[in-house]
Image 1: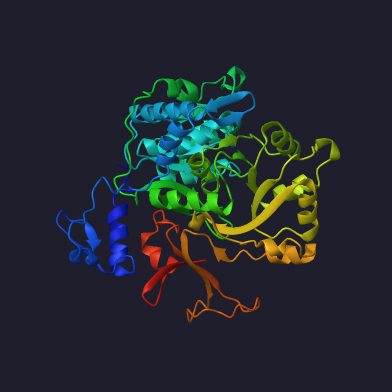
Image 2: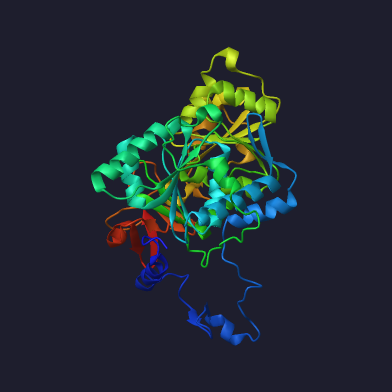
Length: 467
């Protein structure tokens, strides 16, 4: 097991002992050492067992969908298509292949890739192998990639051919600066032409996948607090920090994001959010939960967005405000009329009224949210009400900018004075810090155990995360 995660669960337990919360009060240990509620003592016949308790993990979404929607299209990338049954089989084989390369529970497997099918499959195959997925930002330079690979102690890095020079530069730096062994490099090739002529990789993705066993027995998490992924922050204020997600948090936030995006069953989702960003806002797993279709785009252009919507009847997409700007300011020759409404989630700065109006004229329905890497992506959003539809555009834009209501998997969000820890007036003027508390707050920053008190703050008898 990776030394980074070997003692993660015991640290979480020590943390909760130090900071008791409502979740841990009123519990006692029954026979076998399980932590069970005190209230159970007064009711005979209650038991926690494998029949009524299974550690939460988004891997279960794929297992279910492969049965319920087995013949429905799961992934589309150009002319390439897979069904959910095929995606399930491919992920099992890839997980098996990873274990054959020596990957053990808790080992980190990194990626450097755009929104291509391999990137999607790795979101399931890596945790199926009991490992931890680390999706690196493809906008980093070789120096930063080398730092993050070393910090995460990645054993393997999957690299799309487009970013092979970037990855090779990073691996060279690891060897020259630390004299340590670089991670195994697996090339994600798209065609024979995309193979490296120098052979500077250890394995090729499809070839490696085919060595795996489709009957592989999934290494399910022993505890739902086990880490499923590491997502590095952008480093805008300091060195990027490795935000650790648990299987439990990923499961809950995937379902919460599906809910706030109003995704019904079998949606068609266009990938305009990088999967390396908070695991695609947890929708890599969320779309699987709904038996949806993933439309993958290597690069996001206005023309590609309009063509994908027209060709695949896209129902949902997400993206930063820059995506909206790109769409509304695109050349007329790149645009296509929308024959149905397309739901768009956007985060960051609120869309200006002009952008919102143009998006609505095209046929998009825009919702606004706020989130952090530390909250698995989306955490709060604007809970829209039908009576607001008839309001003037300026007023609708002003209301949409309010994204301060937590989604269903977060317990509480508040703005507090960082000194007094009292809530500040909701007047739009008084400054304070955003405080989150709930089941989709991260497990912690990788290798920053000593700094935990600066991040997790105590408010009365409760613990929350300060931003």
